[in-house]
Structures are given as structure tokens and as C-alpha cells.
Image 1 (cartoon, rainbow, N blue to C red):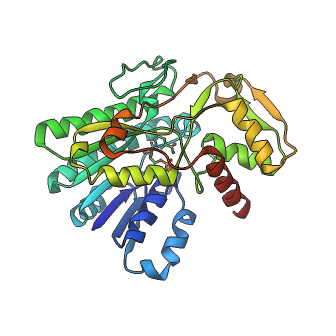
Image 2: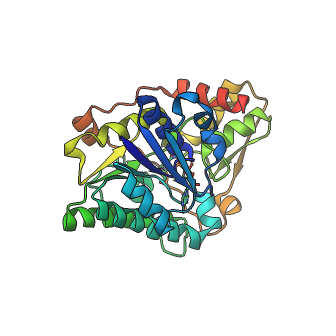
Amino acid sequence: MRVLITGGAGFIGSHLAEAYLERGDEVYIIDDLSTGSLYNIKELKENERFKNKLFIHIDTILNHNTMLELTGTCDIVFHLAAAVGVQYILNNPLESIKTNIQGTEKVLELCDKFKKKVLIASTSEVYGKHLHAPLVETDNIIYGPSSKFRWSYAATKLMDEFTALAYYRTTGLEVIITRLFNTVGPKQTGAYGMVIPRFVSQALKNEPLTVYGDGNQTRTFTYVKDVVEALMTLVETNGAVGEVFNVGGTEEISIIDLAKRIIKETGSKSTIKLIPYDEAFGKDFEDMQRRVPGTEKINKLIGFEPKTDFDTMLRKIIRYMKKK
Ligand SMILES: NC(=O)c1ccc[n+]([C@@H]2O[C@H](COP(=O)([O-])OP(=O)(O)OC[C@H]3O[C@@H](n4cnc5c(N)ncnc54)[C@H](O)[C@@H]3O)[C@@H](O)[C@H]2O)c1
């Protein structure tokens, strides 16, 4: 099978590429390296077993001709390319909207032209500022005002979902939408606001771990290999087409406890420093206090349960970051 992965030099995309290559498939990557990096796919490029199986295009998904050729060539499309990370969105407000709206529209238009099945990577952020848990796919959505720019990420991803579902309803395009909750693992960068790599990097340098707000906000974390397995299973499952799925783990941890566990696990001398949100992100920011996925829908369809427990994933990330 020929698999096109937009954003394939990114964190999740590079793990997905590896999984398909290991299975013997051909992988085509398009990535503009805005937040991804060639380092993420270096080992794949250098692996003799994957010679003539991996094709890398450093380009933007907004380039019609490149996308036309790639979509026409491949059998299935995983659309992961996006402007990602709170810090990146706040620093690049206009470009982020263009990538997430126009880029996804381009992907869907071409998938429809060639009738290629497409999986869209959406996000738990689309739920907005809920306090209840778990969040289920049919829940209402609550955003802050447009003056708080952090919501633009959620709003663009929600628009991507609507566009994909509109293609499904109008032309019968086979689309699958996955709302990924915090996904973690080796290769994730802390540069754009992702909490675990940021904390681990600070801990390894014995610098204070900077916790935003009071640290009582909670998250769940899912290991990237478990997420990749879920995505690969969903695209092979007929009942998934035209549907939206939460993908995530359900073990909730507060950010302050996360910081403490990372200090302990790394044997660091770091302290914890609380930083008010305003100071960290400016006035455009609001946090979400809780974000726990309801996973009944995906569990019922494909039996998805995260396999990797929190301590194991933390150790794998620390080992990778020490080596890097
Ligand atoms: N990691 C998470 O916890 C998480 C959670 C929810 C949703 N997601 C979604 O999963 C997808 C992958 O995220 P990730 O964590 O691997 O982040 P990432 O930043 O590592 O991956 C995104 C990739 O897209 C590329 N890209 C961005 N704009 C592009 C463009 N115009 N053309 C081509 N490539 C472009 C980047 O260079 C990067 O390699 C994203 O769509 C993101 O919204 C991730």
C-alpha cells in the first residue's frame, strides 16, 4: 500500500511513517518543517530496509501541484500537517489559520478528486473550556471570545471536522476524524508549548520546572505508539468512516504532580516555579482546567485501550531526551 502522511516529519507523523514502513508499505511524506524536523525521520532515511520505500517532499500542503501528484499516487491519506502548539499558534496567528483551514481544504478537495480515504487528525482542544469529564464526541463545544487567540486552534480544527463531514455527506468521500488528546513520546519537541518534553528538558538541565497557573489543571497522556496503532486500525475498519473518535488515555494527572514525577524520575535537583498565565502567554490565553476523553466509542469499535502506562512512557521519553 502507498501511504501519504502530511506532516510526516513531525512527532506523530514520523512514528506513523515508521509503523507503515515496518509493515512493508511505501510511505510518502510531505512536510514544510515548520515544527517538524528531518532529524525525526533520519533513522528511517538511513535504514537499508526502507530504501525505495520512503519518499520525502519538503513542501507545504498548500502547494497544489505537489499535493495533486502525491494524492494521485497514494492509496490512503493521513492528514496530520497543521500549525500545532499553543505557543506556535500565538506567535503565528495568520499563518496558522491558513495552514489549518486552507491546507485541510486542499487535502480534502484532492482526496475527493481521486476518491482516496482520508484520516483527519483533529484535537481534544475542539471541546473548549469544559470542566466535566469524560468528554464524549457528542458533547457541546464552548469557546472563549475571538480576542483570546488561543481558541483559533480549536476553531480551525473544528472547521476541518465540519469540512470533512460535509464532503462525506455531499460526495461520499471516506473520511475518519480522530480527536487526539495529549499524545507523548520520543521525538516530541517542547519548543512550542508541549508540557512533558519541556519539563524533562528543564529537569535534565537542573533548571526550575516552569508550571503555568497554579498547576492544578489536569491532563491525560497517551503514548504515541498506542495512538499510531489506533489510527492504523481505524482506517481498516468500515464502521469508522464518517465518524468522529476520541483517541486518548484516561489516567488523569495534575500538571504540578507531573512536574514532581519528572523531577523524581530524572533524579533532578530542579525546583518548581509557578508562572501566571499572563506572564507566560500574554493576554490572549485561557487554559482548559481538565481534559479527559470518553473512549467508549473507539473502544467499542476497535477495542482500543492504551497499552503503555504513564511511568513507562515517561521513562522512554527521558531516555530519548538524554540520548538526544
Ligand atoms: N501531539 C499531540 O498531543 C496532539 C494532540 C491533538 C492533536 N494533534 C494533531 O496531530 C497532528 C500531528 O501533531 P504532532 O504532535 O505530531 O505535531 P508536529 O508539529 O510534530 O507535527 C505537525 C507537522 O506538520 C508540519 N506542517 C505544518 N504546517 C505544514 C504545511 N503547511 N505543510 C506541510 N507540513 C506542515 C510540521 O512541520 C510538522 O512536522 C496535528 O494535526 C495536531 O493538531 C496532536
